[in-house]
Image (cartoon, rainbow, N blue to C red):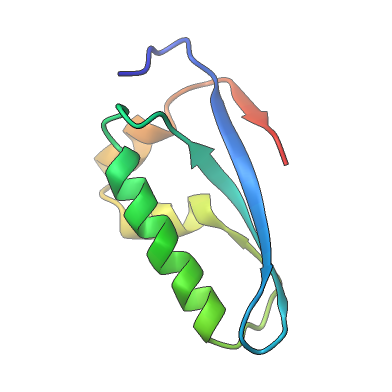
Length: 90
């Protein structure tokens, strides 16, 4: 388990979808495999990327954090993002 004083590292991912659009997904939390939300975040990320990859997009930049806010329970979302220190590493 991660400690409360750990730093949550967020990454970004860029790819081209099947329509040739350049898509950027930001705010992807990097979790260790033993983190209690690791599996849930991995599955949500795969389904989100698949959705973006196979459908035309109106915008080129998407926040995975905002996606998780809509898809996860509020308690789990707050637990995941409760770490106060964020470190963006694009």
